[in-house]
Image 1 (cartoon, rainbow, N blue to C red):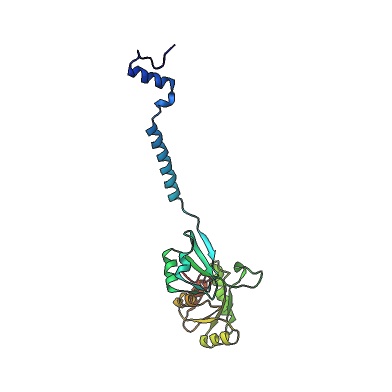
Image 2: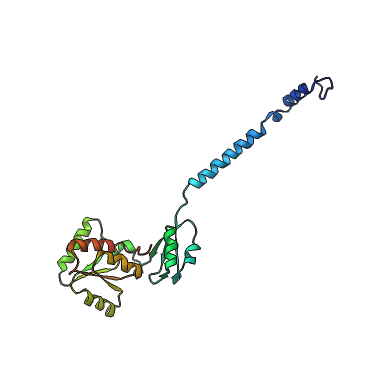
Amino acid sequence: MERHGDPGLTKMEQEKHKKQTNPTASVDISEIVRQVLARLDSRTETAQTTPRQATSAALTEKIITSRTIQQLGQETAQIFISPTAIVTPAARDDARSRKIEIQRTVQLPDGQQPEQQKIDIIDYAQPERAEAVRKQLALRGITTGTGKIVLTETPAKEVHFQCARNNEVAVMIGSYSDIRRFSDEITPTVWVLDMQRLTFSAVVNAVAQISRTRRVDR
């Protein structure tokens, strides 16, 4: 029988005896620590490279300020605001720097969904012209949109009529750039296209752009 702590054994023999009787004594602690740290680094790197899921937020504030944007979660990529909400310039800048898209909601009749709303194109003087625009849009796969579009040679008169008689928010479009300009300022419900200034192809392109103007802020 082997004797533990035998004074007749040399120091080297005693250390060898300890390792044989206690296997854990031979484990390299530094190697274990290195492996644990390597696993932690790997998990951290995976978490950093995995993109966070983008989310949307609905805001009820009447005025959207820079502070409103700053209070949003880091994963927020899109916010919905009311059609009459005011967005301050600072808020727009903050949203743009964080790549947050601002969308104005459009109030629709009960039970009606946005995708169910057909593009309403009206031409009182030349109905066949409105029908020709609808056909061109259908060829592009565009059949739904928001708001009402009026084609006319007397746009100022039509805008006045829509605002005064029908209580609509009407704007006059004489160029393609007017669409983004006015949709950034207000939420039009009627778009009056000046047929004295727009060619037929320009009208089709304008209506295609208007059909996507539920996203009016960035």
